[in-house]
Amino acid sequence: MTQRLTLSPQNPDPELIRQAAAVIQRRGLVAFPTETVYGLGANALAADAVEKIFRAKGRPANDPLIVHLASLADVKRVAADISPVVEKLAAAFCPGPLTFVLPKQPFVPLTVTAGLETVAVRIPSHPIALALIRASGVPIAAPSANRFGHTSPTTAQHVWDDLHGRVDLILDGGATSIGVESTVLDVSRETPTILRPGGISREDIERVIGEVALRDNRPSAENESQISPGLLGKHYTPKAELFFCVGEKAQALEKLRELAHQARTQGRRVGLLLAQDDLPSFEDCVPYALGASDDLQSIARNLYAGMRALDDQGADIILARDFGKRGLGLALYDRLLRAASQVIEV
Ligand code: AMP
Ligand code: MG
Image 1 (cartoon, protein in one colour):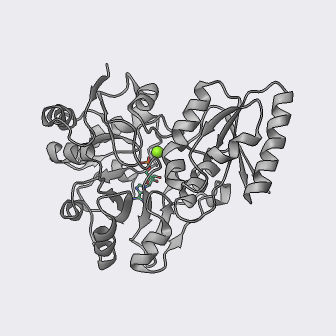
Image 2 (cartoon, protein in one colour):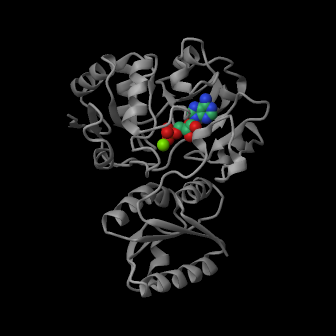
Image 3 (cartoon, protein in one colour):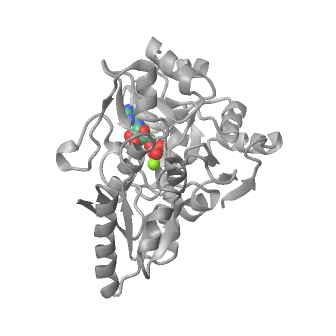
């Protein structure tokens, strides 16, 4: 049985937070909103509770989880080597959508880190997430609250659709504001390296600490890495086949119109996961407007909801394009690349 509670995202009722914290304390699973996507939380210091996350999601044990904490002081209790680089970044972006990979303290279970000696830590800014972490009194391990490999959830209904019957409680705090996951930055290496682009852009990070490296996350056999297996391969996928067109806007739209035409003549239902201003030149498709093409925040906020909405409307294929690699564009590119059945460069 999965219970569902609705809370104010700004001022969550302390009594409801206490109920949720009690579930965490008795080693149950609570799905909760963060500013990025909904997370599926458990006591990060209890290996048996963490194992339940992997079972509920169908997540392979070699895919490490992010540990959520309420303050930098708490981060220091689970992670070691908090360098000046981390202090600077934390001052600029925490709480917020930036995750640090750091050497772990010995008592952090290897179940959480998938056997690695590093741990991923984040301080979320969402008032419900922060209140839950504080009331639980323990660090909360929380991956995105979806079945493994599926599109990440940005509403409580998305979580329900994927996980009802598999988790104890879902806290409904409305739609999440950023809509894509946190940026994962490995600061345990000589050169800080972005393992996953996300809510804080590479440019933002580089303004604070200078140049960082970016790991190549393109799904491919030779990219199989020991560092973080979960980052690689196909992920975030909708049910429909997603065609992702990469290149200049005009050429990309031209190619997508061609694909739409072909698919329609084969009797397939075509979903469009595009910017508002991209849509008018298509006919007889199921449109989903992500937002204006120059408003990447809105596009990120709506990306996953769009994939789910087009699936719900019975799209056989979904057509999408990239929005460059600057700012949030890089995270959008990464997610669409890995959600895609086919990538077409124009
Ligand atoms: P999610 O399931 O959406 O929360 O994704 C968490 C991401 O953080 C995954 O892609 C993990 O591979 C990554 N991650 C977590 N812990 C580590 C770690 N210790 N080293 C590298 N990546 C990590
Ligand atoms: Mg995930």
